[in-house]
Length: 192
Image 1 (tube, rainbow, N blue to C red):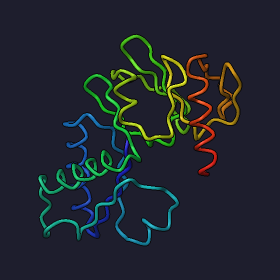
Image 2 (image 1 turned 90 degrees about the vertical axis):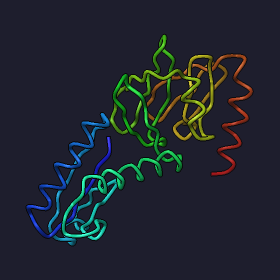
Image 3 (image 1 turned 120 degrees about the vertical axis):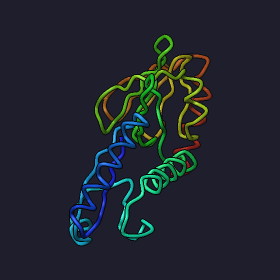
Image 4 (image 1 turned 180 degrees about the horizontal axis):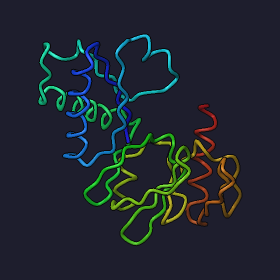
């Protein structure tokens, strides 16, 4: 899910832009929350963080072209893929966008991956294999078990058999992976 703010001084243009973004959402199977603003000071006075802001000046002229709006959002998604701040999870035909730093851990579950997310306090089922997700994550993730990747940002302690995350959740560490886990965790802690 992403949050898009749209800013336009004309109410009818806001409505048109809103409908174009909804169409994009349906075509791409991506959940988008849209907030509309007429005045710029409204947009910046609220404490909401938007992933993308589309202003009137981002559009070529008075007329809003669907292709232009689609291109703006497509470029944003390309930036997401390149930045390593977000990951786009496949859920069958749908896609879910989440911040990488918000992932607690990911576990394999048959041909699915269960992504445990801190901010949403829920589990997201992805149709991607664990190995595929591992390649797209940053170096703060560690394979602590054959069927589990843990985000080292959220580990508060560990021992020979498991790591404890900030939520109190225990994640198993296999005997074969313990030394690798310890080295990676200590290296990350040293960098903090």
